[in-house]
Image (cartoon, rainbow, N blue to C red):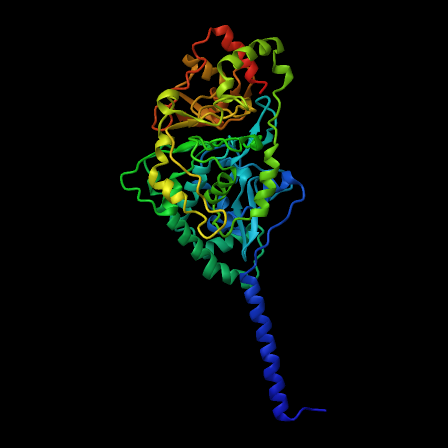
Amino acid sequence: MPLPRRGAVAAGVLLLLVVLGLGAFKVVSFFRRDVTPRFDDIAEHYKYGSIGAEARLGIPEPIFQVLPVMFEDLLPKAPGQGYERLGFLYEPGHPLPVGTSVREKPIPLVGLNCAACHTGTLRRTAGARPEFILGAPANRFNSGGFLQFLIQIGQDPRFEAGAVLDAIAQNGGHLSWVDRALYRFVVIPQMKKRLVETGQQFTWLKGHPAFGPGRVDTFNPYKGLLGVDMTGDDSIGTADYPPLFNQGVRRGMQLHWDGNNDSVEERNKSAAIGAGAEPGSLDLPAMDRVAVWIQDLKPPAFPHDHLDAARAERGRKTWEASCAGCHAIGGERVGKVTPLNEVGTDPERLASFNEKLVEKMNTIGTGYPWRFNHFRRTDGYANAPLDGVWARSPYLHNGSVPTLRALLFREERPEVFFRGYDAFDWEKVGYVSSGPEAEKAGFLYDTRLRGNGNGGHLYGTGLPAAEKEDLLEYLKTL
């Protein structure tokens, strides 16, 4: 039986309101969307899980995939294809590199996680396949090159909506007409704007030596992020990535290269924020999974077939007499700062973390129960435990000495060498850093440039040659 006309109008209005209400709910749900894949296996979670870093520096996934295709000419001349030329690592069956994650906020965004900076690779021989060392310094990841790649894209007229959408389609990406409109009018213009702003925020990099693979300037980017006045500040804070082995024993130690914080929790959060997170976007449960795992993460053992046990035992006595106090877990001075005038290593990283930044760092997390309050200025560099030291090449805080042998035999420290090649020298204990293969695959590191000095840390260099040879053998066992 048909409704009376007034009733039909009322029913129509009611239906329209219901449809509009459902539509509004879907719109609100869409913009509140915050979904990330879950990995039950902790190693997979470490390699591909999100820590919330997509919030500030996330790149829409379809765009991330086509950037190295569209802008291949802006990638550094290095081995590999696409992002491999920036030192990103790929595993079979994974469309994204190790150290990246995807989070839908509300579109899928690619961000970095802990594994980007803390996954090393090693080749047992020049022709062997690389082995991953989870928790080791990322000896191949060129974070500075990645940053410069993105900044150049933001300045490139080729980065415009039509070209990007065409590239996505040509590379097998599938966007609905709604998504295409969203990307054309919102996502791509906003990304270009953000890349331009990033370039403006990093103008201080001009004139600084390139990071190269395995290194990053940790704290100068915070100055731009936190609004620290950098007028007259030309400090260079470039340093090697540290390892994440045995973090449980590092509680209470002075952390970072200059010992500027003694809270593992603050160190973890500040690293995530440096990678692109914001205080409100930190995925604390996901980060806690990693934090628990790395408490007992063991470094790999040095291969026995490259070890002389008798010499190592003799070297143990030299270690205990000359090195253990500063570098053995439980040593009297381990985790404490040695003044710069005593250790004598390059001063630039220490100078980059100034009092202005200390004040700003301790405002991060305002309004949250975990607000930072442990950052402080020190007068030197922290004595780190040397667990798994053989797998941490190059050496010193700025990675200026390629092998442990060159560290002990001071006259063998090269003025220039190549970083980023991952074939290993089992005798000198460090990655191969000279020769045609290293030159082809690596980055030229010049110790004469500011921040790259290889002087200092002369401890043990005055020992008789035979004792240094034995000590080198023992260091392989740590």
